[in-house]
Length: 315
Length: 255
Image (cartoon, rainbow over all chains, first blue to last red; front, side, top):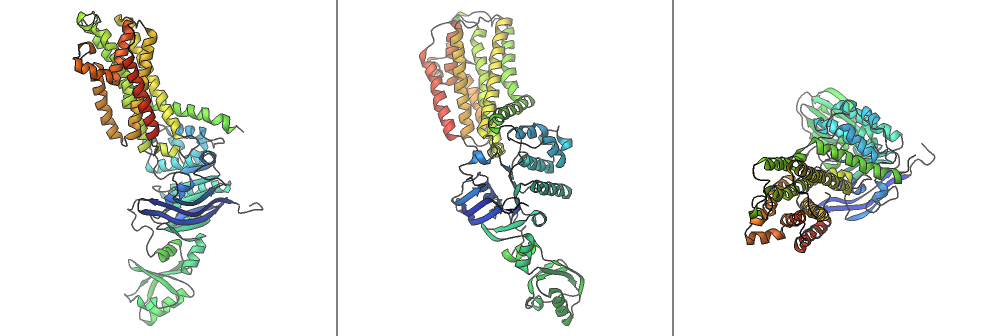
């Protein structure tokens, strides 16, 4: 870190964007610091993609102001495009171009590009350099799309659902690459609906739902602040009335997951839950305790899981 | 380090052009219709007995000489109305133009690269048709070479404007394919592929004069025979170029 650890990369104030009658984004404000990984997390249709597309200049906001490295994306596209790398959710390339040909073309667009072969190597695409785009698997196409966002060695990388469709190993590889990219000084803005991804990668996370930022903090801070930070999971020896636990001051949420029950809360949560059940003749078996997660925070803030209504069109 | 202002643009356009050329060769339907088909037709026509003999019914021209300019038009037509708009619409449909719009290279460069490549193929087609016609089948070269080049030039500008207009207003490749197919045969009909212009009834000839391909063939035939170029078909071609060219620029959408 330098003496000035947090110069600002992106400032968004009171952003608004409406499609017809649909308010995709209503009054969203946030600041992204230089060199951090900043995540937007929320269900499909929450307004994540619209927000980042306004940052990259792809969409024109209906209200509010955006400053990206001191530039306005609506006006200064020419100055921003060389230093902002973008990965879009639905982009494809011609079937009959080879991977290296696409990478080589894109590197020629940028003043100081990364080496296409090295980037392909890191992303596990080395063996596919000579293959036509159409022969790539979904995950390989996705990795190529990430590669193209990073090939210009951008100051800011904006990645929209970069690991969708990747198998777990490929996802880990991409996460490592993003961390290394950040370590070289790139600011990363990513959109995700994977809790794990946000928890693992992001320095700060904005939870976004129905066009509003409903919370913004570090992943740990969010989980801690919102839920109290504790959770216990167990299998009850017999069914019981949730009301037994709900009235306890330590308990915030109770959730049945098959035969398991998950209770999120704070304070002496585990002791209190187990004792209360025992007084009522219920034994808690297979008890597991953990810190609360981002997912818990999300459920508590929105009253639903992030993957509910995933069929809605993402905006 | 390299200076981005001087290095990037030219090199990047070269790379775009290179990849678009690769695609033109790897998906050779355009080449087949634009180059292969007219040359094949020319050769078949030349081999049919009697087509090389001048005929008084055709104003003293041979059937071969009459069809040569129409085959030149086929080459231009295939690249401008069938290949170019479909490629551009596909690039828009699949998000390629949108993706480019967040790079330092504007999507208009890809459009320019597509025009350069299809134009090149059309010009190669015209040269090949002329070379084969003259060298193999004894076609008399156009007497008014400049007039013939002018006719080719205006045919190219008017048909490419039509193609760009299609690319500007049609949203789906499937629709563009249908429109392109219908226009291809309709324009060739008015150009005289089935009924040569000298044999057209007056009404039909009148319509043909106002249709780009009819006007093209009229000017080309003028130039072939070395007669004075008539103004009306030239103005028709310029009109289509200017009006549709302007509308395409105004209406083109990158997303």
